[in-house]
Length: 232
Image: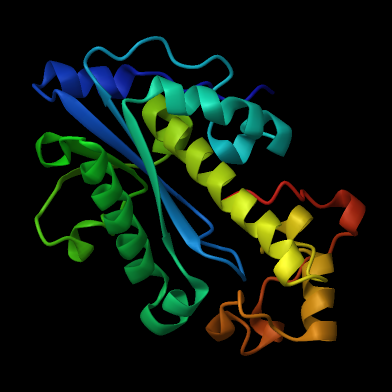
């Protein structure tokens, strides 16, 4: 069955309620064992045009398709940004606070580019507002479950964030070889678990997540049967 195509219905409903600018927000890397957590954001307004052809939630797209789609997502948005929180920060602060930290960094980047984020309404994927606790000034946040699947603006943010984080992990393959970052991007795969057992954790690993590998969700299927697109 073909993946659900996102639309602008939810965004247009906000416009009808008087919203004039939207910041769409999605995170990637939340469930990874290594690397940063990333929060992507795109800004659109009432003049938004037709969505990029083939746009989907990044988790539903193969890596080559995401790579090809990402430039179109950047061009389609008025502004875009990705904020990061490192593995070390995840260890010291916890994942939820780091989602807020990465989101605050992305918002700051949008402001530096000239986006009027204070006047915008933020669409945040999920059912929990992790962003406002990390902000100095409250933001108008609307949470929506499956927004990355259903809302075109959030899907675009997810693609931009996913491609950005994947590229970082691929670059780290030279600095920290042997962990298979090119294929697993820091997520739980048999190759990754085998590398940790052989080499120990790297500086990119979330050490608090590796205290007891027996408690992790160890893959049981053969490598050839696993989904190694490593989304999320």
